[in-house]
Image (cartoon, rainbow, N blue to C red; front, side, top):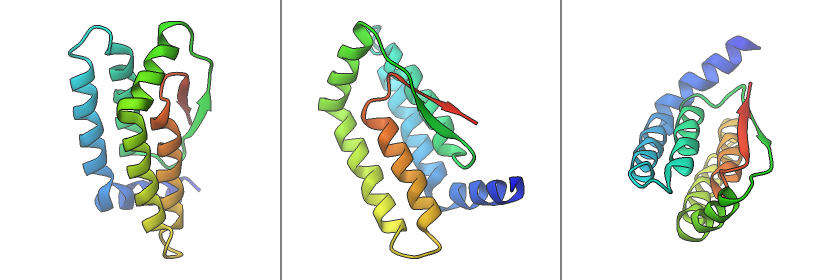
Length: 124
């Protein structure tokens, strides 16, 4: 099972995972420029690591409090929906073929996280 996850992650990196991880990392850097955007930047850094090596990890939900709820709403309205649609679209493209379904499912998992990132974390 670990060998399959490793192979899935290697194929993932080769076929777009590296590009998406770099794009997410750059978004995180931009959010960390502002003081109020640091919590989102930190979550996006975590997401970049997840996007780079997603197989074998799952998203768990926690409840954000206070300012994080407000930041989640601001993120969802300004950037989150665009990122979520991008990941959903790529996931649908991958799911067209039977071989791409596991990769499409990973993109759907990422889309779920990226819409409202504060209040979610990753577990192995």
